[in-house]
Structures are given as structure tokens and as C-alpha cells.
Length: 504
Image 1 (cartoon, rainbow, N blue to C red):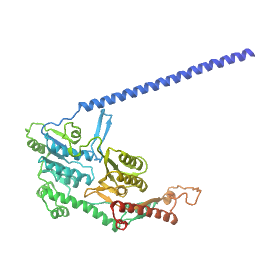
Image 2: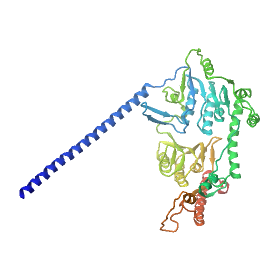
Image 3: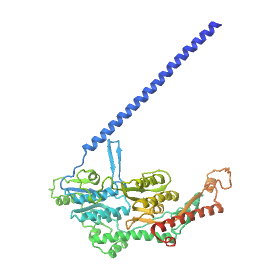
């Protein structure tokens, strides 16, 4: 019996030893695998960095003599430029922002190697205020007496407005010029929501705060119609003034062309002097060769905006040249406003507040410019950001530059600046507050969903989409909305040195 137990113990010990050997074997194998994986990642990283660096040095841009700055807008435009690695070809992909575009146009006016600008306006994915900034830069460029030639197969209102600054505007012989005036199409969802069994619960303050109207009406209100006509009419009139001045056509005639749909063919656009000629691209290229003193067989020296932006031998802008101890901080507020960090396309209260705070505390920063392109968002997040603007204004000049839109919360965070600068066609204001919830009780019933609710208190399930809001709950939210509105207009009144009654 003892011998049997001894054999069993020996067997167990042998198994234990074999198990430990296996355990260490697998642990060691795992460690080796992890180390090898790390080495591979590091090697790939080094290769990528080397590739990106070598690519950037090999492709160094040179501005040749008699170059033409070739401006086209194939990609969506951004207020802020960015540089990101493109792993498809181991290069750095640079997106240029509006400040890069306007500065590069200015620098091109001083660059003896740039003879003129070719605007190829097939697409233009940008807001009208952004277009205005680029157009202003082109008008400034014209003071250099260098040429601007514009061409397109199809001019939209925006591309034609931009092209109107050109010395010559050319249209493809079978092309079109859109010239019918501006229109706002507002989708209304009330009937659809009723059909599917969803009831919107809307609380708002301000009869012109119309963002919730699509959920509560089948037609827009008179107030909304009035304000919509005012802002699209303002934008249209601004465009007509610019076109009239550059094309020497009266605003009365331009409106007549739009009212009568007169610009219904390429030939009509030419007859009405909206364009200077009907030309194909190769014919435009022939004219560009003449303007740069080249023969017909010679290659045109085009340089794109993105290439020109990286060219090492561009003229410097002395006007904004500063030392390392004398900076202007440009902070971007782009997208909807919410709590937290946000991202490239949204504004996070924490991240934006931190950026303003850092600029305020940085002794080398002598002024702050907050660039806003936002339709608004969370009132609480706007209040958090607003507080940092108040503190910044106490320490140093605080300037707001508005892009395409700075409305609602976008205006909230702007109102305390020393100076607010906007384009004539920037959409701003929209000072009001609303709350929007949905009662989906009927929808849930129709699709066979039931909800069992367990509350610790009477209104613990407030805003529950499976039931209708009570009058008491609506009253509480209404009070909250009105308090937020009161705070909003108080900030505006104080920041803009107006009475609260005037703001209201």
C-alpha cells in the first residue's frame, strides 16, 4: 500500500514538473511573440517615418518662373488646416484652411514668379461667408495688376459670385450659369411623426427660435418666414452688389434676369454679359499661354494652392511677422457645441475652455482670436466656454472672427469679445432657447413594445419616451428654458453694452 502511494506521489510530481515545463514554455513563447510583435511595429513605424520624411524632401515644391496659381476646390473647405499621415503612399496629407488660402493669395500677389491666377470652379463646397473671404483676398490680389482668369462648365450662384472678380470669365460652350435667386427649403415632419405615432414635446422661448418648427407645424410660422426671407434676401443682395460692381450690370437688371429666368443657356449668359466668352478648357489654356508669354506647344507652369502653401521661397507677410515672445493665439470653435472634449468637427466645452485658458495664461500671447463656425448646441457647454472668454478679456485683447455661421450657442460664446468681426453674409444671432423631447408611446404600442417602469420618486422617469409629459413636468422645463434665455440675453446685453430689453 505504501509503495502504491509512493508511486502515485511520484507520478503526481512528474505531472507537476511536466505541467510547469509546459507553463513556462507557453509563457516564454508568449513573451517572445509579444517582443517580436513590438519589434515589427517599431520597424514599420521607423519605415513609415523615413518614408514620410523622404517623401516630403523629395517632393519639395519649387515655384517656377511664369507660374500660374491654379485654384480649384475639389475638397470640402475647412476653417482650420491640418496635416495627417497618409499611409497609402507613406506621405503627409495636408489640408489647407481658409487662413492658408487667403494668405497664399496675398503672397502670390507679391511673388514675382506668379504671373496670375486660374480659377477652375467646377465645385465649391463652402459656406457663403467663406466664399466672401476668398473673394476679398482675390480682390486684393487684383491690385497687383496680375491676371485672374475663371472657367467652369457650370457656374452655381456661389462659384459665379467668386468668379465675378476675375478679369475674364469663361463658360464651356454648352455650359450653364445658375442665376435664379436663392431659396430655402425647410422640411416639415409633423404629419410623418403623427403617422408613425411619435408626439414631439416642445418647450421654447422666443418666437423666432424656429429650429423646432419642423416637428410641430406643417407650414413654417409667419415669424420664421419673415426671418428666413430676411437672411437669404440679405445674402442675395450682398452677392448682387458684388456682381454688379465687378460686371458693371445694374442690380435692377440682375434681379430681372433672375425673375424672368433669362440666363437659360450659355449664349444667353454671354449676351447678358455675365461671362466674357464661351471656351473649352484647351482654349482657356491657349489664352493662359499668351498671358505668360509661352508658345502653344509649351507646358503651362501650374502650381496648386496646396503646393504653393509648402513652397519654401514664398514671400513673407511682414504685416503679421511676430517674435516668439509676441504671439497672437488663433483658437478654432468649429461645429456643434457640447460637453466634454469634442473632436475636429465638434466643440467640446472642456477642450475649448482649456485652449482659451492656456492662451490667457501664456505671457507670450498678446491677443486671442476665437474663430467661430458653429450653429450652437448645449446651453450649459456654451456657459462654461463663455466664462473663459470673460476671464480672457480681462487679461488681454479678445477678438471673435465669425465664419459661415455663429448662431445661438455660437453667438453665446462670442458676445463678450472686445470686438466681433463677421462677413456681411455670416448667419448669426438666433438668440433663444428650446427643449425637444419625443413621446413614442403610440409607436411602441403599434410595434408591440411595452415598458414597465419602476421609480424611486414621482418624476424619476421624467423624459421617458414611452409616456406623455405631464403639465407639471412641462412647467418645470419651461421655467428652466426661460432662466437659460434670461441668462443668455443678460450676457449679450453686458458684452455688447446694450440694455436687456433691447436684446430681448
